[in-house]
Length: 620
Image (cartoon, rainbow, N blue to C red):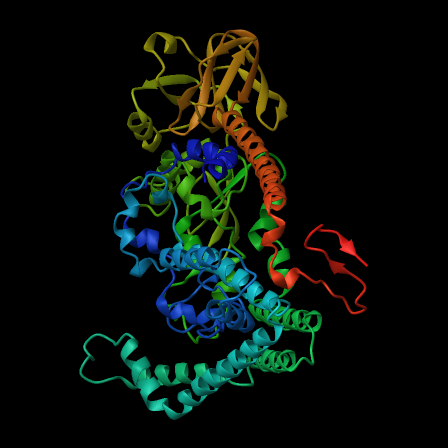
């Protein structure tokens, strides 16, 4: 485990450094960490992934379950894994370890039933992540290896016994499936009654069950019956696979089928089940849903030049889940079709790339405060007004804004308007770097944030700089100064600046202490500017400014990974050599008298040779 952690250091150390600037999650609630956790009823998805509906067809009932909580491995895999737990002689080594690993994954995935999640939010590092259902990777791996061991047993010395177990297990599984299908029909009233009690009842109607609640319960029962019937392709494939397994097991037991035939046949059936699973997941949405650009992206691409986009979170979430969306047995795909027409939240204003929304927890706290609280509040005409947030977007170089329709400002021009959202062009966004007219030193981020929220803030007129001494700020002015980008590579930038006097250069990217700057070959300090940006002082005249991002933890992590990898390779080689040496010594020390009587004669079909216990030589 030590070497494994060391090998992963090249990833772990830079990630740890990144989390030092992440949004503070020390007070994360257990409910946040449990979001997208596995529920007990989701365990049924191991056998049928669409028992409660599918994302592709938007026919969920009950709680919508996403891909994280669906760990479908195929009916044959479950059968073979169960046989591996029952059968003793198996070629699979460390069977107990894989069982414990699978149980650990289930324990961590079942977050609502896991008491550890009451204090895990206080563990540094762990409180940055959610979706416990992703621990299902461990049970999936465990089930796959156990099933592989059961298949391999068909080629062992006890082939017929393994075949008999396979036949009996498949027949029992078929009987259980038939009992389940019959139980849904025979116990229709009981099932509907249970579903009715589980459904939420309208307020004030607790004494009498509304007809619409009963109708929903009956619809859910009907959905279960359809999913567990031969008309469902995936369920029919599962029953067919079990029937084939029973036939193959019987033939192996009778000596009429070989492992080389049975194993590929089982794999083909399992591959067919997984193919049906995938095709059903993507049956509704055509390929263009994933490949064609959204409408807003096409509009944005029409404008060339440096610029960034920002989407109002409230509008995006409304597109994703509009108010009143029923959520089960609706058959309404409108929210999913419209979701792709609005860009998901774009973090380009801070990183220069469109980062996925899933990395929200790794965003620096200041970026979250600015773009999740200050800007949306102003766009919705709440506490901050509309002027300051639009100036913040200009400051970040945002060229296009996706927000609610009806925004009116001289800094906005409507490009596309719909009843649910509008695409605006932001007038005069700031370039990648500029020199403001004056500089205001601030003691901390709170002072800079107050300045950004003032209605009269203009990024070209003033810059709020933290940690800049008052002496250094005196006389800094950017009037008539010009900055031009002359070099750009993966980890650095080069600028040419012409200023009539000492000036302050604002760099339109996120501040990070790993930035290193040189002006005319001399190192200078990089200051946190405008709450989220970076900046530095340039002298009068012509200057060459070079910036390079120097990650402090990556080289150290790489060195640890290299050393750990070399140590692991050396230990592997040494263990192999020592094991081979011990085996040879053990064979040499075995006296001839200890050879078992059964080995005294080694007769073959032709009876051509025997083994002499005295000399140890083969005699004709």
